[in-house]
Length: 304
Ligand code: GLN
Image 1 (cartoon, protein in one colour):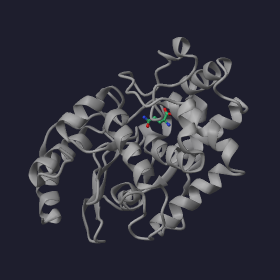
Image 2 (tube, protein in one colour):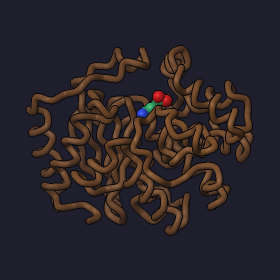
Image 3 (cartoon, protein in one colour):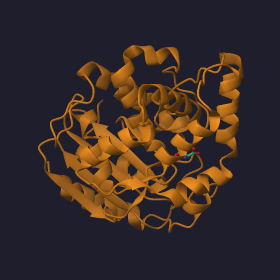
């Protein structure tokens, strides 16, 4: 399979398409980004790679980090994590408060903001310094020691993160958040503001394409069975109320973020990161989804 050829072809097609979307504007720092950029990086399990465009341009990881926070909690806590958060698709936007009141503050899944806040609360129990543990894991698996939290983005989110504040307080009032809400929100915003590029992101997710073991370092992060489950949750919940469309069009487990990042995984074959800041109405990268649909059609690579 010539992945580079397929990427070049689909990249050009998507670039020439007229649909771009809008960069997220509810986080002031994200609104300043030029929505017209696009980068792609594929990391194959045989250690080869293929890329296009602005793959080395930095962006904040945003909700893609929710897969990593969950993986860290799952690795330490095992299936007890599922007492705190469910594994059902929500069918609601990423920042919805909707179901919580009637479901005792137990979020439907770990990839909504509500779910990720609960997982961050669990991390505060499990790690002395979860922020440092997260950065260490990311730096080790990417081999990039300069990856860090972008404080301007974190501060920007903090200044406008009213829904996240509401979510954390609501869940706390229902008993499913234990720690101080401000401490928890700081951790959550910092995790979302970790800045990296498409290559870093593809390398970082190689463990989910390789039965839980990081392809390039050989370090096991999850068991094969845990990896199956995380990939299943990405497939069913990775794109909020567009998860069904994503599975239908692309047929790969994946996760999006409001910075315009998407990671998708072909189990046992590759991990693929794409970034383009223009978002569709569901808050997922417009060109990212178009690219992945074209790419999976072109290569025939999907789990189905
Ligand atoms: N940091 C963002 C928020 O909490 C993450 C949302 C996302 O990427 N979908 O609103």
